[in-house]
Length: 440
Ligand SMILES: Cc1cc2nc3c(=O)[nH]c(=O)nc-3n(C[C@H](O)[C@H](O)[C@H](O)COP(=O)(O)OP(=O)(O)OC[C@H]3O[C@@H](n4cnc5c(N)ncnc54)[C@H](O)[C@@H]3O)c2cc1C
Image (tube, rainbow, N blue to C red; front, side, top):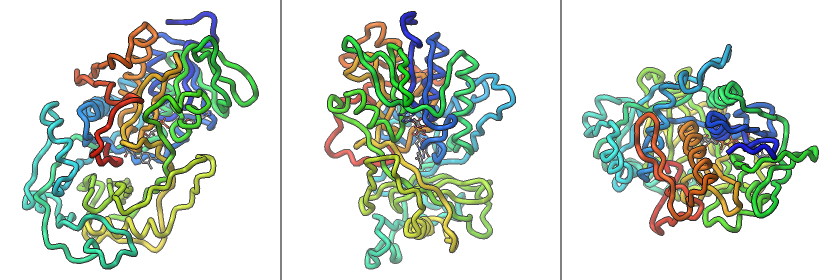
């Protein structure tokens, strides 16, 4: 598939964790790749703010299969990345993931897939969960409420308890998400890839009905028969530039997100004993954060307005006092005695989100132009396997495979699980009653 008439075989736009994953896999398949990023190094975009939780609690079979395969890359990270000289390797910190068995909660969606695919888990009763995790309050508080909705029962004394919880022992998080993108970029360079930083793609070029390269901010045209949009929160803008936005039934938009950090309660060693949680009952997710802290994000409950961002360059990056208070209070419903300090701590970033919270890993109607976008706050864990899936897809489509008519199914190289990429196409049909959020 190499092209002697072009500068490169493929250009990847974006050196986040997904873009570097794609660049590495394409390069390892023998393509001459160039990755372009407007920032100074790999992983400085939304990747650097990722909560980087590795879990398998997805509502689709392909989502679960991909996440489980993705987890195996993290546990074999050094081998996967290979020799990167003096650079440190990103570290996978093991921490179990729990999902309270909220009536009609998210566990109802993912458990059938776990059963089918053989994902290990424990089904704890209320008493077992209380004994194992005494710092958690497993009463039912939800549905979540806004801070000023003081009459809402969410802020009152609950009368019922959860039926127990589902515990996934193989989960965890990556302590330095930016480093993981840097690892992938360094591995790609070792395989022959090129990277250009501080360089903005200003136009996506086409000729004879297909993509033929990009024009960067100083006016230079760089040619390639394949261009991959991995622009994170800027992906929509890149799709507009390529003229493909209107031909996609699903696209993505930037969504402003905040993540907060609180100290663990007195007497709880959260680094050693903590769990991660996806909690539709309190409207938050959380995990441990080194130094005996708890990192908390929003789980998009109905009562919270979503802050869509039309221009990602002007995203308001000041952490809100209200958000810090609200998420601290919600989390303190679940973690007994969670302190909420006077001084707020956390970060502001953006998700590149789709309406159904599933990513788009696909070709487009412009031949040669591919997208790995809409990662919706939940695809960090899949960076390496997404790279594999995109590379398989690109190679197959360029060899003539009609992915639109017959969606490609790729096989995970660790688990052997089949990942149906039809789940992640731009024109997928989503059932009307699907109520989705960051849990995917
Ligand atoms: C707050 C937060 C929490 C998250 N938590 C989790 C989690 O717990 N678990 C999980 O699995 N996932 C999580 N995610 C999602 C995950 O982090 C993202 O899916 C992933 O990092 C996206 O990587 P990316 O490479 O697509 O995008 P990015 O890292 O944003 O990279 C895109 C790159 O494209 C570059 N770019 C854009 N436009 C141009 C242009 N015109 N020219 C040149 N360069 C350009 C940007 O500079 C940027 O570096 C979270 C995300 C956020 C923001």
